[in-house]
Length: 228
Image (tube, rainbow, N blue to C red; front, side, top):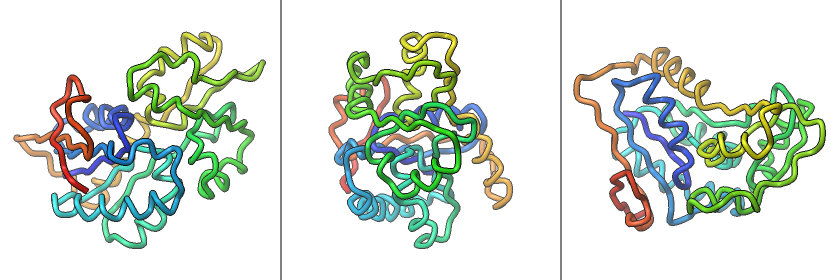
């Protein structure tokens, strides 16, 4: 069983890629709507919250955890790997090719992202309110920041942004390449499962969805409420 974590629905962009890469592997998706959004919270708050979430996922017999959230990855993945003896796959902004990186405020402030981004020629632009607008299904136009002239590459540094990739592409124009990591994370998930001898495809595949918040807001997917 693979556990997939996000603060809300953004991680479904990563989950979808994993389902395409590994259609015979069972998954549990946990959306922490009770604490959504993570993008305006401190690393300390996120770290404490993730311990509760991890303990819950371990009780569900998860053998590998995919952190389908850039903010969580930047804030907690090092401490989680030290604390728990199972493999973690994080979601980092794909900054190696440079360009403009759109991130949440918390990701921009995090030590992990600052260490990563200064290795490459990137322009980091925090996007307050953008993930929240996407989660609510609202118009993102007023939350998408101005893109600097002559930009050739935009990196989506939040999994929520991937959900509206085509809308962002339409706004910024087709001459700008948009990069996001979902396919690469799915391939890495397969590689780690294979390395750890955990890739045991089963005839009966489970895809379970849980939220720590109200379920009535989650149209199209049957989520189960859990208390954390």
